[in-house]
Length: 137
Ligand code: ATP
Ligand code: MG
Image: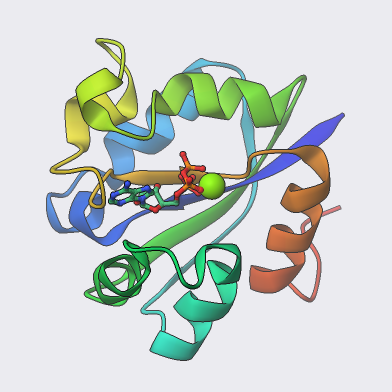
C-alpha cells in the first residue's frame, strides 16, 4: 500500500478550505494516516523545495509557503501518489481540469493550493521531512 505527502498551502488554509480539501482525499479512498499544522520557516521551505533552488520562481515560492500556516498530511491508499496528483490537477491552475483542487482553490501558478509528492521515492523523503517520528501504525 502506497503513501504520499500532501500539503494544503497557505492560500487554501487562509480561505478556510482545509475541510473541503481533506474531504476530497477521503472521498477518493485515500486515508489520512498522519497530520500536522505548522508555519514553515524560510529554512524549512527552502529545504523542502531544495530541488527548485535557482529557478526563477524559487524566491516567490518560499515567500508564499512561509506566508501563513500549512496543513501537512500523509495520505495512504492504492496508487496514492498518482491518485493525489489527479485530485490536485495540473500545477498551473490555468491547465487544471474542472473539479480538481487547483481548479477550485488556486489563486495563481505559485499559489496553487496544494502540494503532492511526485513519486514513491520522493514521497518517502518528504514524509520523513515532516514526520521524522513516523506515522500511525
Ligand atoms: P508541488 O511540488 O507543489 O506539488 P508540482 O510538483 O505540481 O507542485 P513543481 O514543478 O514541483 O510542481 O513546482 C513546485 C511549486 O512551485 C508549484 O506547485 C508551484 O507552487 C510553484 N511553481 C512551479 N513552477 C512555477 C512557475 N513556472 N511559476 C510560478 N510558480 C511555479
Ligand atoms: Mg513537485
